[in-house]
Image 1: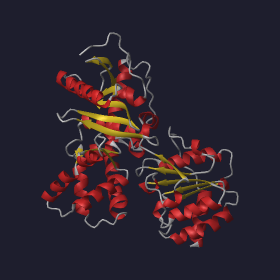
Image 2: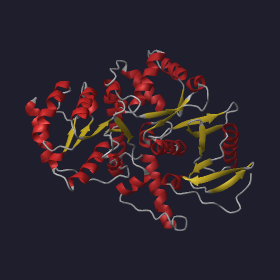
Image 3: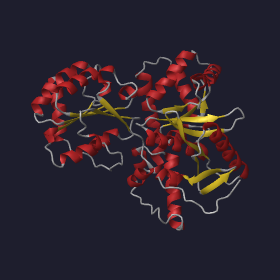
Image 4: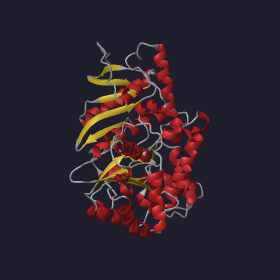
Length: 445
């Protein structure tokens, strides 16, 4: 064991860091927090957590010695999956890194008893600690008891649209998009690519013909390693059938899923099915959004809307929605809302009334509804427009919220509907954080 540890530590000292395309997700802001906290970077597999660590390490090494900084990848096949490795690690670290100030521990949660070991290091060593995890074992909701109050979670997502442009080495002059046909055509092409293929970093950098191959590899890995193997699932075919149903659905209820899977010939109980749904969500693969209701019973009984961590999975794996831009737009908005509101006390719901009128997103902060958002890819059809406006109007009255937004492909303006003001904003402006243009003499409906 000692030889393995020394080999791994020495390989870090000898290693050249890879080229980094910087992301906007700054984790250097978390350095030097007093009192000291463990910084836990969580998120779906391959969203770029490791490269964010390297980004920070490169910053540190500009004016620090290499032996002040240690990075260990616990996915390394040389590392045995046993707690004895951790027990013997720190003596070797102290010998080879006597001036250690920063520890970066990648996928540490794969090692048994990792949390107790990490607590001991936190309590006894004067180092700043950053850890990553591809499951919610390190999330603020599920972090082990011994680390509660000692860790801060930073959730990492696939690339934002701005980061996507940087990775593709593309620039958009947003100041002239409204007036330049050439710049608008370029923007439309890049937006369509971002929304259709998704924004996993490796996929964005890959040639177009192999992008879906990479997405399918990610899917196979997360299903095998982060869901089936991690939770010891024996009934693999039922789990895979459940995933296929979710990929081809926009919402689900446990009862409907149960009946459908049973009709397909799979043996599965309702409680097992509920466990499976929890395992999928724990892997960060999906986010289920409940209906807005003050009654917990309603939130549990009504169908939940399902969103995937990246549009590439819908495009590559769904048989019903691969070219459905409406669903891809809505999923894009859902992920962006999660990115913007992660780490804050703001919840995401959807709203629906007894007549079937529905609003895609209700943003709630505490007991107050802050914003209602509708996503409508094509607003040219009069009936579609009336339906979206009517749903927002009804929800606005019921939820006492007048901050109303519709996100669409290209329509823009501020319109009046039965006395309420509704902002209509193109996806590219909303996702880029550009305010909707106020139109003088807005239309009344």
